[in-house]
Image (cartoon, one colour):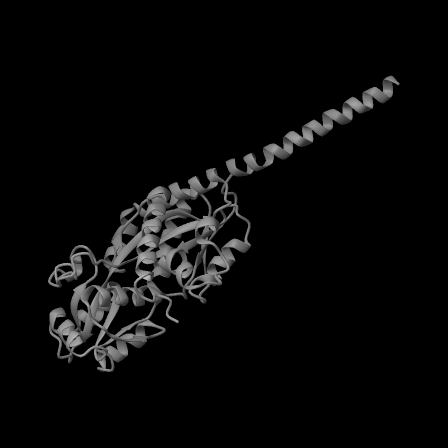
Length: 329
């Protein structure tokens, strides 16, 4: 009997030890994070501005994390494939997704069958940059100013063509159309290169382009900048007025990118990643690259401010959707 009691006591003790070990295992894993390389997922192809900025942020973050990082491109489906790749992986902090208005704001508004819930499934960490767009016309266009282009669109509704290459810029064009009280002949394109070619050739009248991509064409005189979409003038286009200055006092349009993880990622791990990214993106190498090479503004805020930005954008576009069809269908 004494032997049986002893064996039972030993068994109970071993069970308690095992239970404690199971409870301590996640905490130990979090304390040792990161223990191996961290993957950064980009929802665009290699070579894009967002891709190169992500690669630099990942490289600088590797130093802060003490582990290598690598970038994997998952283009397609308006960022849906990249989001699915993130959510299919363990929520352990070793998979970081580049976030944008497409994945966090626009897709949920225009896609009724979206295979993820941006608010429930994704956790923002930090922003990287934001960039205004620029309204441009061809060098041989009859429109020398924004006012001339709008006057033509107002005088003959549907005859002045407007091109862009993404849902975000298409919605920006709808916002511009609504605010100016005009009707454009909207022409969608798949890539910015196609827009630029037809703009220079005179096949389209106007286009919304990101400043970084448009700058070489503007400085070479191949296209003419009419207005920028930021709240303030762009440092590299100081002579070009904002749309606010041009008669639309409430208009602004920015493209931003940032980083996030799966919402189920343990909070200590997410905070470690957030701190590493913020330190990395505060470095002069990153900020100078964003300003000089991407034509953007180094805009780095943490998860709290990033979440507030996304919520504000959602509200704004939801209100717009009640007034115009932003679905693209």
